[in-house]
Amino acid sequence: PLRYPATCMFKGSVEPEKYQYIIHGGKTPNNELSNKIYVMSIVCKTNKKVTFRCTEKDLVGDVPEARYGHSIDVVYSRGKSVGVLFGGRAYIPSAQRTTEKWNSVADCLPHVFLLDFEFGCSTAYILPELQDGLSFHVSIARNDTIYILGGHSLANNVRPANLYKIRVDLPLGSPAVNCTVLPGGISVSSAILTQTNKDEFVIVGGYQLENQKRMVCNIVSFEDNKIAIREMETPDWTPDIKHSKIWFG
Image 1: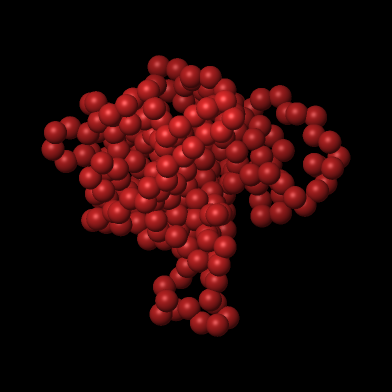
Image 2 (image 1 turned 180 degrees about the horizontal axis):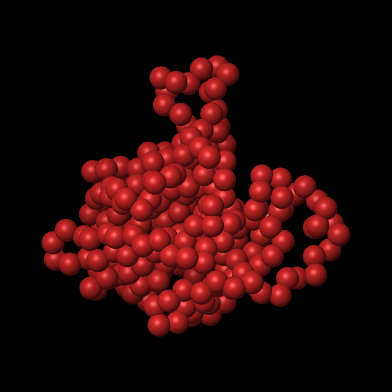
């Protein structure tokens, strides 16, 4: 079992009607960090059980370091697809780890990795708009674009109201990756994202401060390639949820 891995759903090119599931990184039961990437697919489905096949994929090139609290998504451009990995935390370099700081972590560098699942190639991109490392952010994939919302910067101990738009173009030659900083972001980390229809998502839970749960919910909607974030009617949380130290997200 892995804690805080990055996961996403992937529509393959060979059998587009069948989905695969991508899992990267996370913490192992021994508190070690994984840099492995797995592809899960359904091989048999009956009324009583579903059988999965899980395959480990090897990456070459700019291989992302072991991490957790990051995101992975798949974008589609010009009939091709590629994975996009961003953010997360990793243990501090081994040369800096002492007995007292053995489990100390730091933000990963804010590089954007493009992962070719077919050939196992990974390429890192440095974008000037992404200056600080982020983890436990919200990511939404739309066609050839990834939207990054919120997140927590460990170095600054802040949850900035980020909203980044990362677009990936996949021509015959080298991919092109660009980032745009958009207004109207929200301050949140460790939230749950649920898709309610083709053009709408709901953000629930998470934290707005270290010890302050985020009780408001947001609707994220898309229209004419534009993103809009607005608050929705807040559920009538029970006292147990309001005052409990345990929270979802």
